[in-house]
Length: 238
Ligand code: UDP
Image (cartoon, helix red, strand yellow):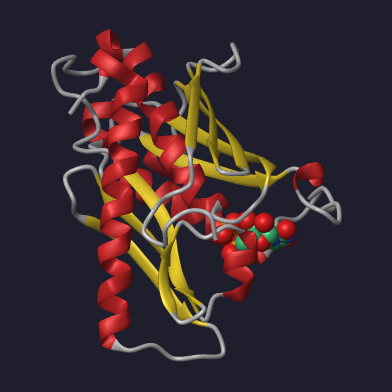
């Protein structure tokens, strides 16, 4: 293993990657590459009409060529894994959102995996957050109160696990495949937890191991938050 077990993979962030959406981020961590776009619509879901509040939702997809063998394109139905992942991304964004301050509009964060090498859901959250901030900044003047940013904090996510008996950060696919314990952790920029999903795969884990995984995740998410902040620069709202 070339990197240390507590080191995250190299991250590259390209904002404004495509022109059609106000948020568009090409997010790469190691060999995982995700395009995250954030689109704004002045329409909210029917069940939210009259509330004056906005909504943030997410969709996730792995493109056919993102993995070997080719992944069949979802035409009519969304599989269980995809549903689970897109709900996680949406929940993570809404955990820090002030939907009243957003006003009556919906933002959809679309995460399309161009190349999958482990950690595609966590990359989608970390990259999607940058796209979401860019999208909100694009209509900031039209917010109900332009001085009140509709996110209270940022979120970033990382996958950690026990590989070859040792706590390891930012699992790529071979590591994920070999991991006895696999955990996805979503945290805010200020260091609170949003979601912790840990599973012993045909294995169990001790409280001590859990603690060491949380320590690794905290370090990783902190570093990712700095990278998000540097990517956005002076428009960083927090
Ligand atoms: N993977 C794949 N095809 C699939 C699902 C997963 O090739 O249909 C690979 C891909 O590299 C992915 C990894 O398995 O990143 C781990 O998948 P998992 O479901 O744990 O989600 P992720 O770690 O990407 O969030």
